[in-house]
Length: 351
Image (cartoon, rainbow, N blue to C red; front, side, top):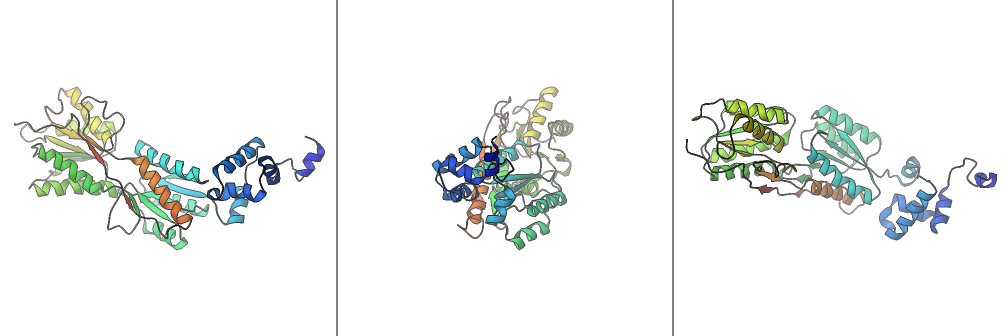
């Protein structure tokens, strides 16, 4: 590079904002707006500026942008685990919306530990996140207090509760499992068991179990304590739980097994195959989530499908609406799960 050219760049060799503006044939103010307030710049101009910046290997200084505009263009999301594809779909939806609006999405994982979730939130607030999405309502009060005291918009995802003090983007977990239990009752089942992930620090699981119990109570039934299996959300636990349930005598064992998610139900179906049992001939079983494999497994798993990517899209749009001043608070939005009736659940057999 020529010495004169280097001096024009402040002696550092670094490309300046003015050079990007010249290459894109726009003003420096337009370059700034293209990165700081992309909604105020046409898509054609925004792309021209980005192409110029990329060609010159110019990256806007995030600290400088935040100082100049009092904006960081950073949003945060805290999910309970990285081991479940449903949360990946939600984050994908959020990422697509935030990226289009010039926001970077920070991701944290609580591992179902409320204190860890609070630490993640504190770290994100310290870095200037302008909005936050958290999964479920089982978080320390300090988390919501910190958000409210700073005026940071937030949403609770993967849950919907009309009585909640928080804006919820998700579905009614109780209602979903009430519907699933009603479906099994309509098939003539009267002896029920359940295989579930732990409900500790998990309001969604508690609501799902409440939905099952409420539906059974309306029919004058209940799940016996020994027929409620709770443990890790793994294929192995699903298989182990199924094997334990099948040790009951034929006349007393459950004919319908409600699982907290597809993973547990698929594990149970694998164990059934190994033991010579078959659904729906010997028992009926249901899951939740409609994983990609659930419709391809044999027998096809009766389950419920939730558009988790749409949850992420709605969450991001609600948060952005508050950030840009279109509304004072994020609004709750309900997603209704779709029941997928397949071969794993059939009419109860007389025994």
